[in-house]
View: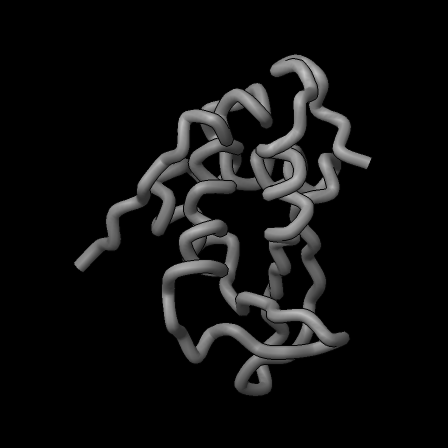
Amino acid sequence: MKRSVTVYPRFNQLTNSAAAGVLLSWMYGWFTHTPTKLRVKRRGKLWLAKSRLDIAEGCGLSARATRTAETTLITMGLLERVVWKFDATPTNHYHLDVKKLSRFVGSDKSQNDKSIT
């Protein structure tokens, strides 16, 4: 059974990308609304342990679109990705900076200004 993704139109505007907006919406859901054993605490932060393929399938995006959207969010400073072992297997771990996202969404910056630092 596939999960649905609630897409926040403001996220599409912030990232200037439909795919990045979908990925950001999906990540936001995982970090704010979904109880899961896939989140681990390291370095004082919560991290989501998921493969890029699992994320692509969850978002309904192609692997390439997911990779590009991930790069966009990392460049914006909203998303971090590291590889750590999860169940003894090297796995991508993602951290969404929800506080930074909240500040960015609530700021008075123009839609075309994607910098958040």
